[in-house]
Amino acid sequence: MKKIVHILSFILICLGACKAPVDKNQDKGPLILSSIHPYELLLKQMVGDAIEVRSMIPPNASVHSFSPPPSDLKDLHKAELIVINGLGLEDMLKQSLDKAGNKLIDSSLLLSDLIALDSLNQVREQLIHNHQTEDEHHHHTGSDPHLWTSPRMMMKLATKLKAELVERFTDFAPLINHNYETIYSELSAADELIKNERKTFTDPALVTYHNSFHYFCRDYDIHYLGWVQSSPGKEPSPRDLVNLGAKIREHGVRCIFVEPQQDPRSAEVLAKEYDLQIASLDPIGGSLNATTITELILTNWEAMKQAF
Image 1: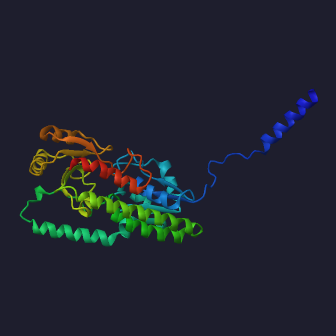
Image 2: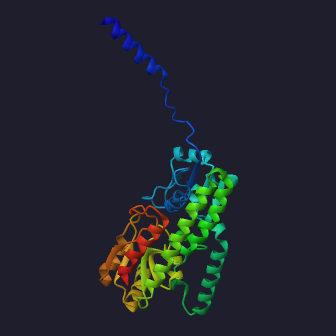
Image 3: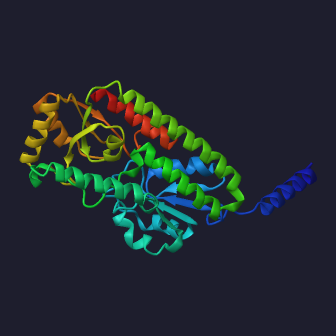
């Protein structure tokens, strides 16, 4: 009996010795980084499980104020591809991203023609309405960075990213091409759905926490009356609130939208003063259960409709 016990013990020891140690730094295959969650959704759907995709900025964090810990920046060296939004959205990562070289893809450069056309249209509108004073406007510095809120922008971006991915990850080209067709079809269907549902509303108007939905409102002819913060972290002055309140009364707005990542107190002041409902839009999607970029856009559209 003792002999059997010794034999079994010897076998167990050998099995334990043969087991390979877990190397935390072991190569897990290609890594793609996105700066924000919406692009993480788009890229994950395009590459499936073939390539690991991670977002540098957590979806529950404010994009405009997040500062990554040094440990997160190590992934920038490991990543084979880094997809950012551009237009100043990732300024807090600029020093690290400047070293990324040809691994870096700036989405705003892939969409530069659409952004330039939008900027020209805004200048034209300002010239038409030049009787308004500068104080009556709220501006982003430069072009609006919230590209991902527009299905039409994302259709073009998906096409551009597909070409980049197929060139860089040739082994997965058939998978990427197949998934791209699904993504484009879903975004196109969402565009058609929103366009048709928009027709059921008369002069819809929107007030949000900050200017996250400019491209969306432009695409579907929704009056974007204004927003609480003219730039991230800048609280409105009493005059700003009065001017926005006048527009709210003029257009009969019933609802003001806040964002989960932002302090809602200024919006609550407006809501109390003008008897508005408070609802939430989440352009980043951290509070939503969306698993694709199309789901993210449609979930926000469903919430937005209650204001009309």
